[in-house]
Length: 334
Ligand SMILES: Cc1cc2nc3c(=O)[nH]c(=O)nc-3n(C[C@H](O)[C@H](O)[C@H](O)COP(=O)(O)O)c2cc1C
Image 1 (tube, helix red, strand yellow):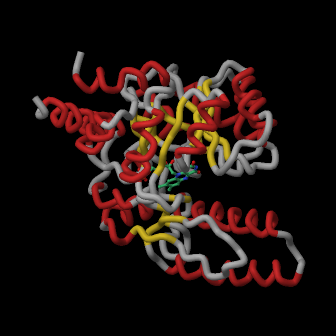
Image 2: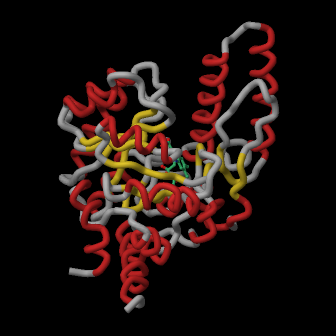
């Protein structure tokens, strides 16, 4: 048994994979092809449900199952208006793992997932929330720092790891996400007590990823400093920051916020509707870039680890290099 296997043992057991490496759900990118390729290569793929309807999720799970015999997860956004219908779809397919993202899970959702026999994984933004989730019976936690691509919290991965791992790593398996591009970083978080890791950005340019060639090219050209966070322009309209490569779309988001803030002021929409409007905007902007290849006006959500994405490779090659680098780092400690 390799050292990496020993360090990842709890994560591997929880996921039923060869490596405790999750490919975090990425809207539009994490669909049947990438998800099945990740799981077939020994990692753990997660379908991004995003704003999909229950019918679409049903089709996506069916199609993914046709491409892999291995476990994969489904990521559901807690604010989805049909969350419980989506949970029913996962239950119907006996999906083994459900990841709840995007805020505090509504009452009854954890219970509904567990009743289906699936394991439930939640994002812990703070130690207090992590403790609360453990008490509620979640099977594993993800801690994701602000280096990550997409919607992010305010705290860096290095800080969250120090705040949370020493206190909760013995209670449940914890997966560290955000800013991981090489195996040496995986080794370091495992040594701190993580059971595994979650990467997103590093997998976007996999051959098996359906992201548009222009989207992949933007990733391969970018350096870490190009992956910047969106700015909140109106203090009355709190928006979750999004990390993406800077382009014309970055400025368009500023204009969008002003437009939505005006609707809020006029009473045309309430705060909930305003925030949903912002989220729909992001989903549309990401689709434009990932699917249509409009890298100027669409959203190029990417983490700072984009600097370590330099070529298109197969998922198997990416996982193999991460594992080799992590193993070499762990061996070098003797
Ligand atoms: C293009 C893109 C889209 C993403 N979409 C989602 C999403 O829909 N739901 C989610 O929970 N996380 C989403 N994420 C976050 C990833 O699941 C993952 O946690 C993150 O990419 C890890 O950090 P890294 O990018 O530094 O590897 C997205 C990330 C990227 C780069």
